[in-house]
Length: 358
Image 1 (cartoon, rainbow, N blue to C red):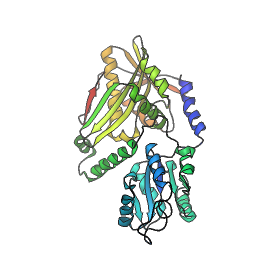
Image 2 (image 1 turned 180 degrees about the horizontal axis):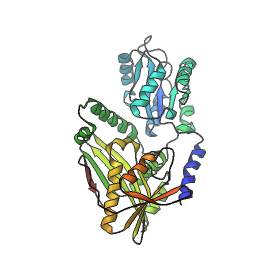
Image 3 (image 1 turned 90 degrees about the horizontal axis):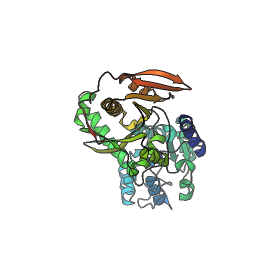
Image 4 (image 1 turned 30 degrees about the vertical axis):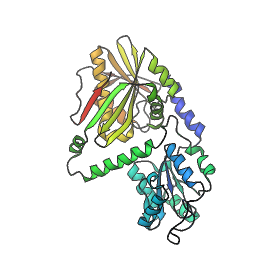
């Protein structure tokens, strides 16, 4: 199973041929609308733009704007055209568009290699491309050309509708609150009212669970990927436990942010998969989720082992295992098997409320 799962991620990448686009940044003049706004305040939308924007939103692609324009005038026109709500962090002013793209990436905490920049002007495309070679650039022509790009296909298991846009919008509110907070990071966490719910996976969780295995790299102990069908089989297996973790705070729901797969044998539980969305890395949820599994294993009187496959990005998970009391018991073919010493049941940090439905 380990070799098959490791190959599964590589096969998925090879099938796509390119890395999926997570963010599309639109120019406005002669791209979103026909003409130049400051020359004609009633500029109409270009053919198919509204269709393309709404379809990308439904696919879970985040969208923003980088435009040389008067900000108030441009935002007002986007609102009149019914598109303002679809664009997060619009960058409208007179500076370089490469700087605008950089600010969007930093605010969203996403790599520039997941960006596509759309502009009718080859000069602007070149300016962004020189500053950020990893950003893909193109001219918007018609919906079919844009929506037919392989790197804009819906990710496997992606939720329908505007879920991702709403999640990022809420995350930006959290970020603003954190930047305005004058105390320590620990004191800020205490103000959030964090609630982590751990429960058995249900059929309705499988699409998001699949997406997590595909998208999560840094806080993923093995890097294994699973399809929704595979996860459903494991969910119904008597020799496995498939758990999901959901997080909420005073700003709203983060949704499903964690996934645990445990293989159960006589006297031994093995963590085959432990992952947490990178969006919640600073909330301490990965540690709490692991601590909860440890406590459950100790309550059941079984040994607990965890599989770890080192990658170039998941060292934080190895550190989490070490700090939780795991020690290496064997290594083979790139797989590290760790076992918990079982010395004490861990406690949940004060800033987070754990709700277990197991």
